[in-house]
Length: 110
Length: 142
Image (cartoon, rainbow over all chains, first blue to last red; front, side, top):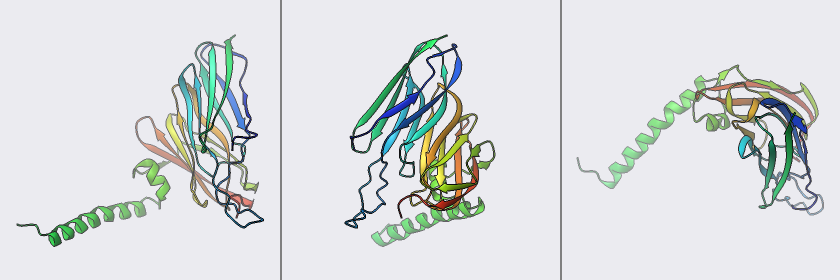
């Protein structure tokens, strides 16, 4: 499912060097578990989920999450990251169908 | 001793039984740690405590249940919902830039059940915590 997928990321614009910041991410996605039935035809709707999410800062990993079918629709994650220097957070979502959704946010040192 | 085909089979079956038995006894002696949990820990026993799992006592809608896990000193955590068709919900690996080993997410729960967070610590040991969540309307289609 490549349509209507929109990543949203909330990162503070600036932070003190070495401090911890809280990051919130949300991506719109149906996360079809493969267990629901089509109400009209009675057939199973095939599984289509985002199976992996990663967050990196200047190439260093913050979190790497392997997602299964029991993650909610529109997957939401909140976590804490350390900001050692000015740079860019890179967020990547990997879809079952091979699509990759990306978002990036720059952070300045206050 | 000369090994015939039959002998080989017998020896093989015996060895298999010998490896399977202690594992079953092990699982029983550790408060019935689930298969999913065992898969994550590689058969090691997880101690209770050291991990905090925060979730509502009653979730009205099983389609989105907010859960947060706090596991100081963990390198990775797995969230397991035993009552779901596929118990493993997510496994989170914390990188060097994770400021704290905590994560909040929203999960699906098929029915009221016990949700367990298992954390792998930096020293290779495992810790876990569980909480009961009551679900009024189940998720996962059904």
